[in-house]
Image (cartoon, rainbow, N blue to C red):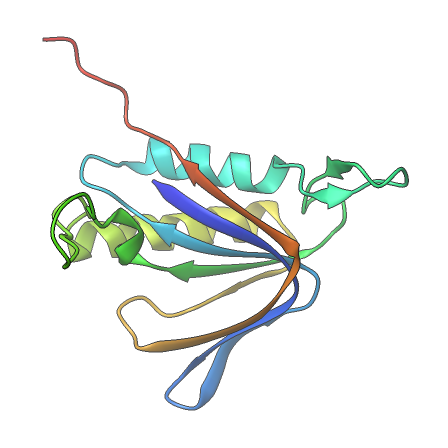
Length: 152
């Protein structure tokens, strides 16, 4: 699973002219499932997102998580994060999970997030979304949780 998190002052997602999710201060996270990912990787990514220390403490150090600051969490499905860009001038999306797996894992992350965090908003899987945000910092981190390797 991949999460591209951005610390934001505010962020929103619009689909067909209607806002599907909006937050104030918090994290806007693009979420992507790759082939081989399961609920285990989804849970590990969410745990990391909720505890990743990207907000400043009183001394100005990044020592607080989105949970610590009671910030919003805007989860946006984004399969293009799995693109293989190593060759040519067109990305290959073969590393991405199949759409049905991607949707299942994104929905799982959203359900779990809503159980564990106060403010959770989302984009819409498979939709043409317009994402607006004010990146605070800017602060952006790419997180990846790989499935366990199987010994051969």
